[in-house]
Length: 391
Image (cartoon, rainbow, N blue to C red; front, side, top):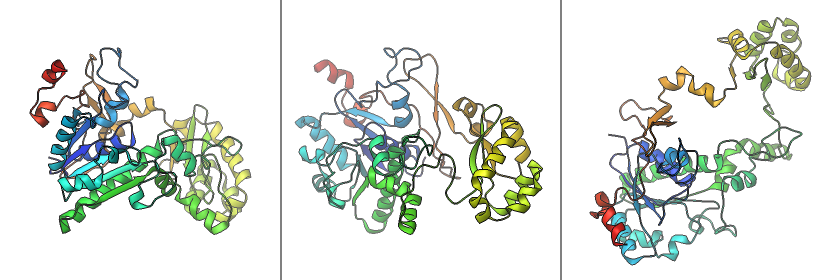
């Protein structure tokens, strides 16, 4: 039993931000009921597949962020399906949706309506630009995706090489960070309800979340009056704190405090550098020349040699490929690669585990992602095959 096994979550979300939020809740034990529009979540058909997209129920994108949920297919524009949806809401603790602002109101299923059916309901939304209930802006109602949020929120402007273009991060942080903050908001609302009996509306915007994510850029702008921009893998106030090319890849070194710097110089057999630049201000002032010295030293070593020389003395690590992550014993010891069934394939697949670890109610993926409408009979007492045949 997970820490949230007492919670029923009605999940109207699709694509990434919303499903990642409710995935976290499901891993923590919540009973998450995924309400899918006719035809299902649009990412069910997204690759990759193990072998045959025609035979497999869904691809890796859907599997990863919808594991451990139940599925029911409903058309909120249909009176019968709308009534079924409301019956689920009446028994729910939380409703989560990530439609554009005003979408649920078109079906007369906004927060105020659902609250009439369930007065202590926690209603949570994830939108590109937030909801008018928590701060109205002209952007609300516009569509947004990870790329839009990263562009507006300062992530792209501060990511990439100094002489290169603005660059988005590899992982979709506009979705994932927003989803994680929304999950925190939901849990805070649950705690508040436990104390007061009062439900509430929780709203997390992707643009807002990216401003929070780029917090360093915000205070730099305020303190200095200068707009931060791209610095590659370096840091504006720490040195050395960077990636260096080695004989067989790249490795990172984080030796920015005085003790680590002295240790690094000792390993390099460059006591002259330790004596000439003993303090952070001195190293920052001469960072370009020092970076060149470190680059020359690293270039003659393999990743294993560089990390081996610094291990236990200076923070350092190889820049790993995903293939190398799959070979790392640490990852398996921490249950961070989890096998799940891939319906329609002849083998299991692995998805990312849950990084939250708890001694009594440890979160974990609770099985594969659902088939479309798989849980209709369990949830509504109706047979999905019979319903399909009737249609």
